[in-house]
Image 1 (tube, rainbow, N blue to C red):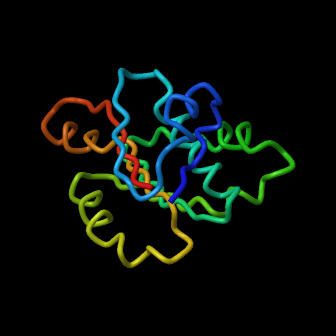
Image 2: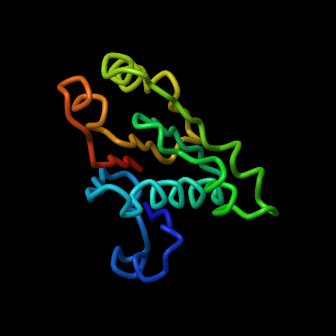
Amino acid sequence: MGAFSTLTPSLDRLLEGGLPRGHLSLVYGEASTGKTTLSMQCAVSASKVSCKTLYIDSDQSFSHQRLLQIVGPENVDACEDIIIFLPQSFLEQSRIVESLENYVTSRVGLIVIDTVTYLYRTALGGGGSSILIVS
């Protein structure tokens, strides 16, 4: 089944090749520890093998400038394989997640929900700090 490289060689070694395909992975950590960058790197890695990524950006932390830094000027076309959803509420995020099967094709290799708990905790009055990556 293989794996998507994290584009970080030492992490790929620890993961025995990268983020495993066909598995659910939860990346958890404090704010500003690189979770979004890691998910973006995995999305770029997926695009390098002609796979699309469905990226649900619940906390609006996806940076197009950072994505361009990761792909480099010679690979800007890779960005076309990353489809970004921007839910504004927990209800909208839930609807997107529930309708993902409408977007999944044979080319979709990675689904990212960044941050899976953010809008839920925001609705309750707190914040979120985890990413769910499905490959």
